[in-house]
Amino acid sequence: MLLRLNHVALAVPDIEAAAATYRETLGASVSQAEALPEHGVTVVFVELENTKVELLEPLGDTSPIAAFLAKNPKGGMHHICYEVADIVAARDHLVASGMRVLGNGEPRIGAHGKPVLFLHPGDVHGTLTELQQV
Image (cartoon, rainbow, N blue to C red; front, side, top):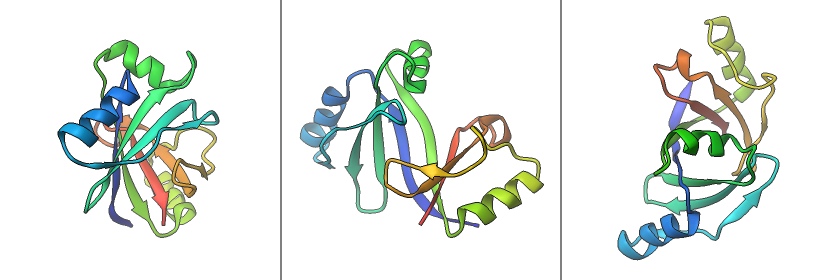
């Protein structure tokens, strides 16, 4: 079912400072910041040869990233994202296996413009897991 790692998402308190670290210190290719109000975040993508790192900064006090940073003020890994061929088939298989899909269980369009779902971290050994249809 899982195809490849799409990205690792890091919550950061200052997206411009984090982007500068990846661009200037680590020499990576870094996208422009993009506000995604429907997800409550501002996002930057660090493009690597074999995957991406997604930097997330809260967009408003109700952002799920704001709650994460309240517990982890310096930031940290927020979630990991894997690609799947058919997100609805993957969801149905996982739900039948006892896993919980967050939200209303329906895929929604993610930051990459593709359907995504999140799995409850309690069902994936403590890691918030995103599935993205390719």
